[in-house]
Structure formats: C-alpha cells, structure tokens
Image 1 (cartoon, helix red, strand yellow):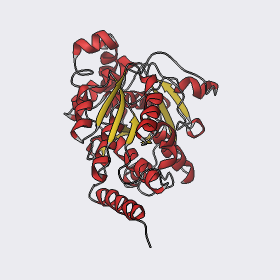
Image 2: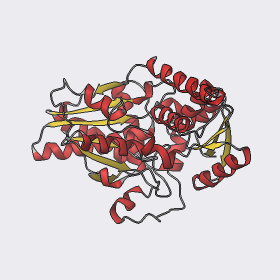
Image 3: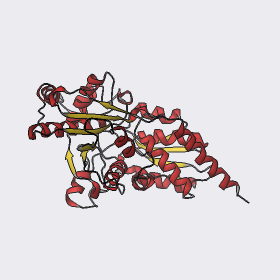
Image 4: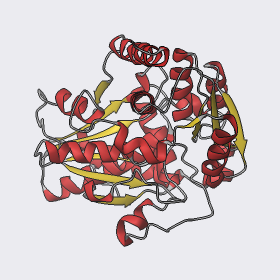
Length: 357
C-alpha cells in the first residue's frame, strides 16, 4: 500500500509537471545589427517565464531533484541561498506545493526582488555579505528541520543536460531554420555555473562545433579559477551584477565544458544593458548586458577575420527588477562609475561593427 508521503510526492511532481505544460517556450530574438552583416546575433529571452527569469528553469529542476531524492516531504521548510532571482522562482514553486520558503539573501539585493519573493509567500532572511549566505542557510535548515536546496552545489546535476527541453535543447531547436543554424558561439555568464554546465555538456553530447564562451563580471573568481584550477580562490567583495559572479568557486561551475572565458567590466555591462534596451524597446537586467557585451566582442572579432555565422546569448531577466539600482543614474555613478566610455564604444559598434574591449 502506498504511504501518504509517497502519495504527496507523486502529487507534488504532477503539479510541477502540469505547471510546465502550461508554459510556452521562451522566445529567441534576432537583433538587427547591420554593421556586422553575415553575423547573426540572437537573445534567448528567459524573462518570459512565469517568474520572470532564467532561474525559473533551475528552480523547477531543483524541486524535482529534491522531491525524487526524498529530501522534500509534505510540510518541509525549504531554504535557499540566493542573490534574488532563484529565490523568486523557488518561492513560486514552494507556494505551488504548499511549502514554507525562506530565502537567505544579501542586504544589497534589489528591493523589487525582495518584494517578489514575499509576493509568492516566501520570507527573506538578510545577511550583510554574499559570502554569508551559505552557512546561514545551513544553520536555518538544521534549526527548522528543513531542506537547504543549495543551488550552488546541485544546479549542475539537477538538470538533464542531454535534452528533455532544457535551455540548450530549446535554443538549438529554435535555431534550426536560421541562416546559420549551428551557432559559432553561445555566450553566457555564470552564477551557480549550472546553466553553462548544461549548455557545454549538451554541445558535446550532440557533437556540435559550437564554442561556449563564459563571461565573468568584476568581483568574481570564476575566470581566475578557469585559468588556475585553484578551487580555494575567494575574494572579499561581492559582485555588483546581481545573479552572476561569485566570491568563491561554486561546485556547479564545470570549467571542462567551457571553451573560453572573458572578463567584462561592470561599467560595460551596465552600458550594454542600457544600449540594448533602446534596441529592444524595453528594459533588460544587468547580466544581459554582461552576456551581450561579450557576444558583441566576438561578433567584432569575427568581422575582422572575415567570418560569418551566428552567436546566441541569454536575456536573463527584465530590467524592471533593477529600477532602484542599475537604472538609477546616481546608484550607477556611485557604485559602478563612469559608463560613458562604453556607451561611446557601443555607438561605434552599431555604426561600423568594431568594439574595443
């Protein structure tokens, strides 16, 4: 006879899968960039998920992974360490399953993200620095007899990287009828490292020639780890580009599936965020700026070499979450610095297709 907990888990998985069936795939947007004719650049728009970001996919996978491994039962409090977007998405799924949810987040997290976590019934537990989120999450999980979801450890293993409509599968399927269906590059930035692991593994599994370029913001150890292999790397400062960049090497970041890494200054990320917003007619988040600046660098280099092809990158979330930070000129001036030189570089790129780093 099936136990009541087994029945509850079955119903929880059904609810998550039903929610997935109600959601359409995210759009692939082609940018109009006449200065790099023959090089097509696309944005995979993850902001259209029900919770508004790329992290919706991750949250769904993490809940299914925890449920199917027996780590979440009826009534289990769920705790997550996050910079905001993953916590928003996990709060959504926790509410769907009737579970209490606590997000351990830095005090610097955008206020709009905090309000969205609370909108879905989650509770925010604030810490002074991003490096404190891990230990505090473990402490709360032990104290409450709950489950610490730990996206930074489980992101790379919770997603089926071979297919099953993951982000890589979706991206390459949508490219099939384009002029250059197999991208020369996919460009993305790491937060947990889970998405780059999924895309890199999928590329290899499907025997594609696409290269994976991972772009890292200021105040992040990922690029240095990629170059040195030193897992003990840490820094005191936290990333100013929410959702990406980490002060320590995260277990879900798999350097072996990455073909190259680039450092993107935060001023370039914010400038590109504003620049592409004008092209699209809507606001995007700062990590999209990081991704796109790296993609534009690659497009410029391809043009110099006389190459054609396609580049795909990610539009991670909407800029509406960052109105009191990245879209506030005073915050940008005091926190990021002068972005005008990068705005001028982007204007030049739009005119002649060249972009200096």
